[in-house]
Image: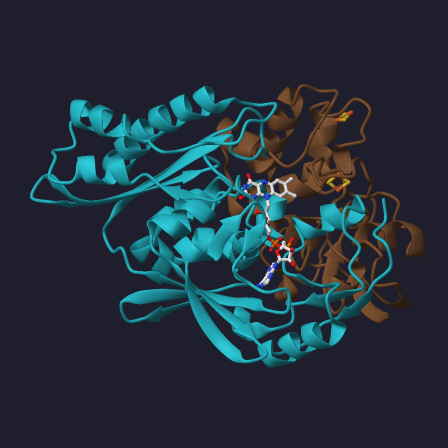
Length: 183
Length: 284
Ligand SMILES: Cc1cc2nc3c(=O)[nH]c(=O)nc-3n(C[C@H](O)[C@H](O)[C@H](O)COP(=O)(O)OP(=O)(O)OC[C@H]3O[C@@H](n4cnc5c(N)ncnc54)[C@H](O)[C@@H]3O)c2cc1C
Ligand code: FES
Ligand code: FES
């Protein structure tokens, strides 16, 4: 089946098998290996990307279901060498050890901040409930998300885009919903 | 793992979807949010020959006011249910239960209709639908029919729908101004309910005038705790009255035994969680 998907600001048209999972399309056909697979049960969240501005587990979406949609992966966040504020906060707060959960954690944290720009600790814990980390014990991840919230005030979404000078008019709900520049 | 190969169709109307299902025959499967189906396909626990995607049918999405009931499109996502003002006003119990489902990513994709059609006894939206006397509108080759929630859920993962039928929408009688709470017991994040209790209560002049209590995972299907409902009517919602009513919660239940809990443990949970659910509903 032929699909057209905009990924990190670039439009792709490709033939895929209906059974192809979005995460495999991203990794194997587009080479976007920043998004990883951590489980077979839809539990770990390592594969989280944004689909039309909302976080999804890309192992639990068929590539054909993303036809006509906009996808943002962790690879589409930095702008001209400047990290997204959430990426920067993960770096500053040592919010990772092995780093395998990090792409998904960052994408889900951005989604969380779009819904709730100033989450308390409990809200962060619940917001990243769908992402498992086997290393950090979550403490520094929570610190990073709250630190990012602080840096992204007043509004998570459009403010974060401004880092990149992305296309404001198309800015959706989530901070990364605009691929930025490519289109 | 990668699912076994299948043909894929994404019709744009309910009629086309019903036709596609009929044409594809026995081994066709509907996909809604895919949050239960895709894990099953990835594990190759199922291998449908054709997958019919309901995701491109606009009429299946959203909540509308229909006089004394709300009508919820089957493809309305958990995320949209959580934020719907009509549901918050007239069917708060559904919103409260949906808040406890899975995690944010799953709630962005998973649908209200998909949860009911999937009919997992641990699913969190079945007991609330039963408690609020919801009705399922089902489309098939011969048109549409309506089935009450009490008749819809038949067994583990089994509903009154034939394989070639589609759940189109759910009619929920308005419960405007009712107090509501969903009390869920699980042990780790994003886990399913071991047992959960859905409670909705209407008060009048300081006393409970009506009560609806549904139990999750206390049988192969959701069940109503009628004994609790009856014991609450006419009472003031004092801690003693709630405790006494909650004692009836496990009456007549024969829950499944699994590695998590035996019968007695589940029945004890049902009583304790019922007390908590009613207390929290009254406080909210
Ligand atoms: C990690 C994880 C945790 C979860 N935790 C919970 C939880 O705590 N509580 C809970 O209640 N759920 C939980 N779920 C399940 C989630 O709520 C699903 O969204 C839901 O069970 C199925 O909805 P869906 O739209 O994704 O359906 P799908 O997965 O697309 O379909 C499920 C089944 O229903 C059938 N079906 C779907 N829609 C229709 C329709 N309109 N007509 C006819 N048949 C249809 C499909 O053919 C399939 O057999 C969890 C899921 C995951 C991945
Ligand atoms: S790979 Fe684990 S949830 Fe997607
Ligand atoms: S840093 Fe290793 S899994 Fe999170």
